[in-house]
Length: 116
View 1 (cartoon, rainbow, N blue to C red):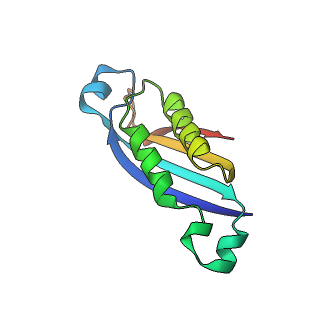
View 2 (cartoon, rainbow, N blue to C red):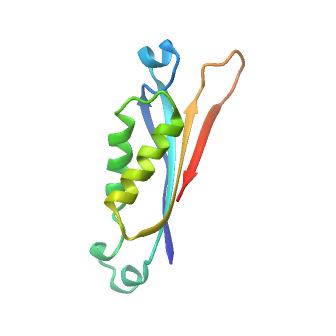
């Protein structure tokens, strides 16, 4: 088994319950990891035998463009998109960080993590 990771994908998006988040948006960072049987890719050196991480990135980008009130819903949609598009993945995790959440104090980020 091997693991591929995409870390620190950044998007400006409009997720959240506050009117300011819906109007102005916020910066989000997304980390993904996926486990799969990478033995064929390890031996062959052919992209066709590996998980194409551009597919994962495009799933994340597509879901980031669809507004959600909650990052829980956003994570679920990203994870579900990966699961439905890349059936060779045996285990996957998604973590979304909302940078500068709208709170009354200084907070670098809030985040939610989900996996299957």
